[in-house]
Every structure is written in C-alpha cells, then in structure tokens.
Length: 383
Image: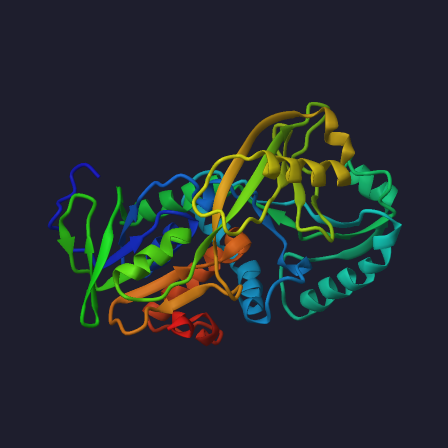
C-alpha cells in the first residue's frame, strides 16, 4: 500500500483477504488491534463466487459440532450489518426475503414434515433468521417464485430466510476495517517458525514479527501449514454457480429456494437469478467452468424451476471453498505456537458462519468469553 513503511511493526497480520480474513481484521480492530491484511489475490477465492444464502435452519447436513456456530451466526449477522450501515461502508446485498423449502414432486411431499419440525425446533432453541414457519401449497409457492415447477405439490415457507451478496459484504467489511486502522497489501506471503513463534515474510521480501498471526488462507491453508510443519488438511471444494437474467419482473423480493437436493436458487435485484452449485472435491485448484459442471447446475435448476428456460445466461462463477475433512472449521490457536491462530475451513457455509467465526476468533485472541466451547474447532484435532 503506498506510503506504508516496510519496517513498520504490526501487532496483528491476517494472511488471506477473503470474507473471513477481513472479518477477523475488523473484529480485532474493534478491539483496538488494527491488523495488516495480506491478500494473494488468487483466482477462485470462494467469497467472490458465493451466492449468499443464510438459511442454516433448514440444513440437515450441518454436523453437530457446527451447530453452535450456526446459532451464533444468525444472531451475529444483524448486528454486523447494523455496524456496517452505521459506518456507511457500502451496500452488502443483505435482505430478509423469506425462503421456501420445496417438495419437487409428490414423492418428496412427506419429507416436508421433518423440515418443518427441524425449523421450529431450531427456532424455539434460539436460532434467529427463521421466524414464522408455514406449510404452503404448490400454487402459493409458485406465486412467490414464478419459475417453479408445476409438479411441486407443497413447500415449507419461513419468514426469516436471508441473503447477502458475498462480494459486496466482503467489500463493506474491508471498508469498515480500513476506516478503523487496518491496512492491506496485495501479494504472496509466507510464514516461518522459530520455536513457538511465527514470523511473516511480506510480499516485498521484508520480514516482520507480529504478536498475532492469523492464517485465514481459505483452500490454500494447507500450503501455509506445510511452511510451519503443521497438518492443516483443508482442500479445495470447487463450486460452479450460474447467474441468469430474468426480464419479466423484479426478482429482488423472491424467496430463497431450497429442496432435498444440495442445489438452490435465489433472486437478487435487477432481475438476477443465481443457481448453484456444484460441490466438487478432487479437482485441485482448477477454476475452469466445465461442461459437466455447467450441465449439473443447469439440469438441477431447470428440473426445479423450468420457467427459467428462456433466461439469458449472464455468467458462471467458480469458487474454491475451503473444505474441512470433518465438516468443522478450524478456529483457534495453531498448535505449538505462541502467536499463531487460524480461522478457515467453512466449506459451503462460509458466507453463513464465516463472519461469526471471525468474531469468535477475536474473542479467543483477546481472552474474552466466547460464549461457547471452542474445543471442537481447535486445529489440534489434526496434529
């Protein structure tokens, strides 16, 4: 960054400039610990592709250890958005538009009972962003989401379904963090270990010795772990996400659309519809849009919402999600270090629980009560 001295001492350095990295920087800066964020700018960053559904209440795939994070995230989000608005940090695309969990045909209709029970149980246990829950007819669901298949007999609607624009949210958090003293450098960095202490090599080659080093490198985290002799088994999970243009009417207030499939759809302002997403492991750092991936997304989208058949394809985004082998993110002190910390591994839930995870990390770094048991998220489980 122009005007910044390479010899300046930083109390905290965040390695990784995605949503989680900037959220960690912002959380520390609010505690009077302004951080330097070093962003490699690699293609495929998950934040820049994420669709932005915040609906952990319907997810049966959350492992038990991740549930406390989901509960905390739904409470944290409205607070974070209010802070960003107060800071005039820019639009985040955050909106509560409701959501519908659809039975795609009669064979799936019985499964709606379990979905409705799950939503009510989680809401009554304290999960926010659920609100009113109601069983609705297929006709009512199609009135809310016009392209929906005529084969859908029913759906569960819940008022608290919320969306966010991943790129815009990251930009707003970055703006707010810079406003309160954080700094940024673009380029590759590395970390080294001497005893229990980590040092950071800046993109220019200069070395610094921060009191706090946060590894938030997304799917590139395992490479950073190798540099300091730690097993951090985060791998890329490739997600291909399709953006379409709907020209008939506004899509800004369409509810989020979910079903028993892992795919989803949602509307944004200006007629934009997002359909996603693949969940591809074993593809390494490949950021290409592939024929198979595009076919999968289109096939699933057209099956549940054939009315999008005449939509224009605007773009396909590819994000490499940081996938943890046990489905639980890594949040806490790096094993055997005095100044090393980690926050990553959120997989497809990064936009939902990432900002709250960063807040939790800030609590741990500053010895505040985190409000939950952080043990399940410690990277020590991999050593």
